[in-house]
Length: 424
Image (cartoon, rainbow, N blue to C red; front, side, top):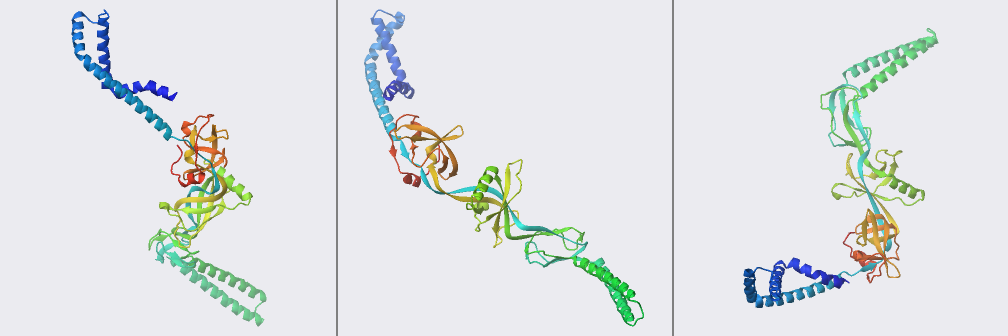
């Protein structure tokens, strides 16, 4: 059938590809038609033009015959060559069949993430006054209890001195009254009254001392100092932010997970499956050298996005990670006996993925498959095909559903070792 179609279409191909030769042939044929009709007693042209045509055609008779023979030879040569090329092209597109592989693969999911310090606070002034000393530099590491800022405490020093004097006076009165009480000069109630007065004065002196200590701003934990918000000599009010302090020994990395993946993760937890490997990819494709773990899951979903926030905890011994960085979280899990097929063995129709399966009877059948995950050059199949099925790797477009096919079989190990093309 294909040979018949090629023989029918060959003259048209010749006419399209050889327009000048075709036009010359048509002119010669038209002249021959006029002369032949004249000899048969039918004049197609007026007498004057007819005589000229006879003379012209007699001169061109020999040339037309030679031209006709040349064109016929060219046509036959072209038809024979086209037929040979068609057969060679048909033989070049052989159908190659292989089978899926059941093997261990590592499935990886990636999520955009935000990196935070496990403790990141604002360092504020507890009392007002002039900023007297700045004892740290931006980006400096500090230890817990290190003095960072001093605020000039003029009023608090005077108040503490006054309260301390009152406490000393109350203590002196109490001691004298107690001596008199021992000598039975004053009553015991007088001693108790002065004792209470002394306790009140001591408490007020301690409060004044504490307020004076508030003017010394110290680091509440080990961390890294951020930018200074106030300069030396600035008038500080109570509660003003002087800088921020970050504890970067452990970093909290937040990323949003879709509901389907969340349910899949929780199902694995309920089955006591091993947690996925948690890795962090930084800017420029750099992978962080420490492995993390899932530290927490937020209590509620985001109603607008349908996601829930996970937190991964990463140790940061070299302090490479800083508060506010971004990156990608990679969750990797090993799947055993996963069904793997080459991507180029599949094709897509209306957002669905298909492949051609060759049955035991040698007939080809189109089958829909569901993809579980996509790796480089291969698909991990969730359902639709098994390890024992024969699938068409090359030549799927030449095969029709239900027809019997002849094919060459290539072992899946050889196919997987030479995968370079993705799905069409």
